[in-house]
Length: 311
Image (cartoon, rainbow, N blue to C red):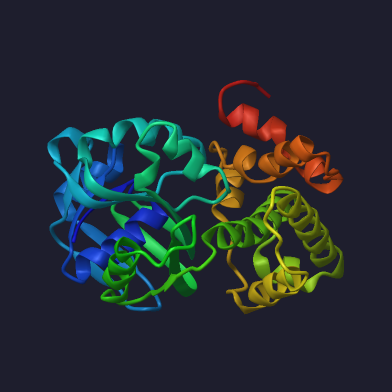
């Protein structure tokens, strides 16, 4: 398949790199020092699943030079999706488009700019970071991608994309019967871990071992489950317990990307995670006091990172 990866950070770099390693024609849409590194020295992925170095990769900052592709993986930060949705237009032909963001709003944001029939749902699970320009460091745990049609159909295009991922090493790929539920299931997990991790500044191993922070994570998850139900996504009661069990399986030193961004003074996905819980809860009259507290505590740092505050 010919696949464009819009965004070559931790998520796009890892999954795009694995697809290229498997022989697919992959082009990365990148910018800045990441683009320069990809052009001059290729892409290196350091991973417990197998480290590899692609000495030559296709990379550009101009989607207009790529031409139509079979699939576009939008792997930017959640707050960058509207910009990405506008930029991918030159690469669209008979194309399937999937967002791999944290949060639950990416598909709607993509549909506002492109033919909604081209958009399918996606969920990525990985603990990774950009170690240096052109270098992606996978911290542990088995990465995976889950995709599916929003109407539940087992379509040929989703099956082809799953098969493309399954040809790659170092990841699992799944076809979902209910991709909306899978997106919310990840939202429940990542927003809780990101929010509590960002205010506690503690890695996963510490948060899950301390009764107080573990309790806080669970309460955040319960609030998100209530918001999901109000929006027509009835996650089972066991979803919270399953997410906590998954948390227990992750590397002890792991941190979410939002936590890393806030700690290092970069703009983060706060508005797309805990902020979205608050916003979507208010739409349906669902109280989310713990998520509101997390958002309020982190907003000064977020606004400083975006140049809106000085202190």
